[in-house]
Figure 1 (spheres, rainbow, N blue to C red):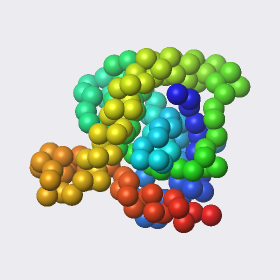
Figure 2 (tube, rainbow, N blue to C red; figure 1 turned 90 degrees about the vertical axis):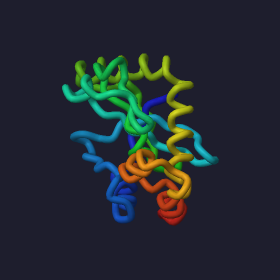
Figure 3 (cartoon, rainbow, N blue to C red; figure 1 turned 120 degrees about the horizontal axis):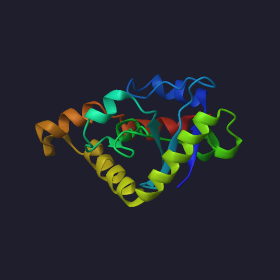
Figure 4 (cartoon, helix red, strand yellow; figure 1 turned 45 degrees about the horizontal axis):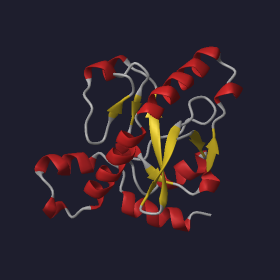
Length: 161
């Protein structure tokens, strides 16, 4: 599993169709994420930097803390399909800010330990979000509402130039 950035223009394009797509702040605060294969699509799963609120939150179907929130979180609810051409692999050693480099190293080390959990959680959430709402519990409908619309974004990804 590797860490990636994603193209600003692609994020802006997807946001036109789904307001749940997270904003990419370009060079100042770019998306950092993992890439997983789900139903033959690359899915970009964004990470979030550590915040005090993460320590009090609990892992859930669409969210996973990295080392108890100490190193941030994995936002499965904001994962998006992406072609390889929109992704850039992060070379941690090339990072100039030593504090940020350490955070990326720590995140990567912890994520590597969670690889099976990450894949399982992403696939289960994908199934929940793409399921018919008549087949979901009221709680699962709430989860689905805070997730990106995976099926719609897959269609829009195919049309992106």
